Length: 624
Image (cartoon, rainbow, N blue to C red):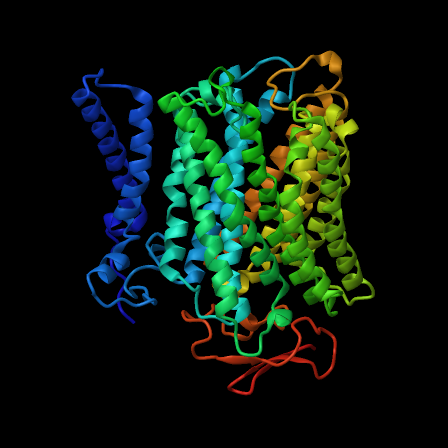
């Protein structure tokens, strides 16, 4: 074994990228200043200088990090390899701060970044929740409160998108028997562009912030401080990552499945990932376009959304929500796939209605494109559009209901065990049910006119996100942790994390809904004590801090288990899935030394003589 050498910090892609990003920002500002001088204009104008600097900083980050290195070599005819084995003399942690084309490394990079970004967004929430615990302004002024509200929303959404990328990148090749993604270099590019983009979004806090909330509606966004532009362009590049990642998932699934794995033998999570990717590939352009148009309106005086110049602010909402409502399904479809993936394992029963669940994911993705305008019932949209969008919104309940009935059928009379991944799976089902039941009042015009922009919407949205993404994401991490690390997490800490988070979330979400029914508006820094919501806000704040503490326990459990955890069995859950038939941790090139053929159904748990896979060694993955 080679001796571990000392790491030069500037040899790390992350560090080089950040240094180059700062250089790119300065170069961009300098170019704008020079051009203005040559045009006979005043040399310095902050907004165009910062915007061009921001765009150039992302390009410089990618160059400095080395994302384009292989493409340079290919352009000049030099040989390259899709598999770059890590330097054995470097410590393991250094691998995750450098460019890698291994989908497992990229998946972990996505996952760790997601947890960090969600932690930042949660910290913003703790600050403004402390302010809201009591009527009156105690700690922050109105502008800072508004910025924190907006940043909490958009940074949390970015963190969730990164989490979706983590699950899709790590799991899809393993579940279908591929050695990697179809486009490994594009996969690395799609991850690394998120890093400078996230830094741009957070930098808006230091450039005047913004007072629009996470939606960036004009005319407020057309007049907001400079931080608004960093918000726009950071989200723009995050969306670019989502498009590229979606393309990779679709091609990988179509082209790289193992022999014998037809579409009806694919693991159900892969169906969810493909449905998610179809939305990401076809709809993400719309949010990028809407933000770009407002940015250009600010920079060049264009009148897209300025009524005085023939523009229409409602146009922005149509463009924005055409992506941003399907984006809800980008967040939750992978989570619902995780639920369907884990339930049969811990119920020791076949997945009830496999084909219906697979088709319901595509159904949700399709119907999701026809519901965006229910966000606009109070916006002055044409009245004749309200009823069609009301019915299309309610139609989403049909494929979603298919999943719920399938989950109940899978659990019915099963031999269930309640390890931490199963607890989070069951918690996800109960919380997502709360989100689903609180949704129809927002879909019907008469009730939405009262509930829109109240804390009812906040409670509903948080229930949907926690049930559809957060709880399944945590369940997935606990479930695949032994395969990722070769170590076992602490079951006691995992269950403590679950019970704290579950109970606190119910207090938080139900409290938010109650405050909304009492008339509390969202994105408001202060409220009249006579409204009767102050005790409720105090409980919401306490619950929020409890959730934050639970997530700290979660991170501690993971880190401590990686350092000192017990060695994990190769297949601790008795799974039929192909990756659990491999050694732990998974070999660098997945199935290169363990090719297999699919010979049966993926979820025939509890059935005799029902193999799913046959390896060339003669090993099979069958039910117990």
